[in-house]
Length: 293
Ligand SMILES: C[S@@+](CC[C@H](N)C(=O)[O-])C[C@H]1O[C@@H](n2cnc3c(N)ncnc32)[C@H](O)[C@@H]1O
Image (cartoon, rainbow, N blue to C red):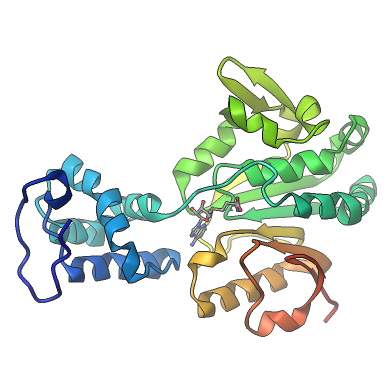
C-alpha cells in the first residue's frame, strides 16, 4: 500500500493487492475524522495501513476505484458510516477477562445486590462497550452464583443487566449467546456446569442467565436513552480508544448514572480522568465506588 501525501493527486488502481486502490494521506485523515466524530475513536497515524486493509474489501464490494470515492460514500450514507466504524473498531473480548473484577464482585458486591433484589427493589447493572456479550455473561454467571439457590430466589425480582455497544454485528452475537468450544475453558467451575450447556459446535449460555440480559445499540458519545440509575457499571477496554476529553465526559456520565455506593469497573490499562475522579474512591485494582455527594 502506498500512502500518498496530502495534496498529491489520487492514483487509480495499482499493481498488487496492496496498491489496488488510490489512498492519499487526506483520505486517511478524512476517515479518522469521521470515526472520531461519530464514535470518539482516535486513529493514530500508525493505523493508516490497518485502515487500508480493513476497508479495501468494502471498496471492492462497492466497485469503487479510490478511497476518495469511499470517503464520499461514507459521508452521504449513514449505513456505510456504521459499517466503516464497525470495520475499524476492535471487538476483542473474552469470558472472565480480567478475572479479579469478577472475584471482587463476588466477594464484595453480589450479596448486597441479591438482598436488594429480595426486597423487591430494582437492581441494574450495565456492561458499556459489551462487544459480543462475554463480559455481561461473565457478570451474570457471577451474580447467579455457585449454586442454583440464588437463581431460583431472584426468579421474580426486578433485576436486569444492560449490555450496550455501538456495533450491531457484535450485539447480534451477544443475543445469540453461542460461543466456540475452546472458549468454555475460560469459564471457571462451577459457573461453567451451572450456566452453560454444550451445542453441536461449542456451548451456549443457559436461559436462566440469558433472560436477565438486554442487548441495546448505544453510542456512548451520544445521549443515553436510559432511565434510572445503576448499581454497577462495567466499561472496560473501550475508553482506551477515546481521547482525554471524551474519557472525562464519559466518566462524568457514569458517575451521574451510578447510585451512591455503586461500583465502576474499568479496563486494566485505563484510569479515571477529569472532574469525575473526585466522585469515586478506589476500592481495588481498576475498581471504583461512587462516594455520596
Ligand atoms: C475491545 S471491546 C471491549 C469489550 C469488553 N468490554 C471487554 O473488556 O472485553 C471495545 C468495544 O467498544 C465498542 N465501542 C467503541 N466505540 C464505542 C462507542 N462510541 N459507543 C459504544 N461502544 C463503542 C466497540 O464496538 C467494542 O465492541
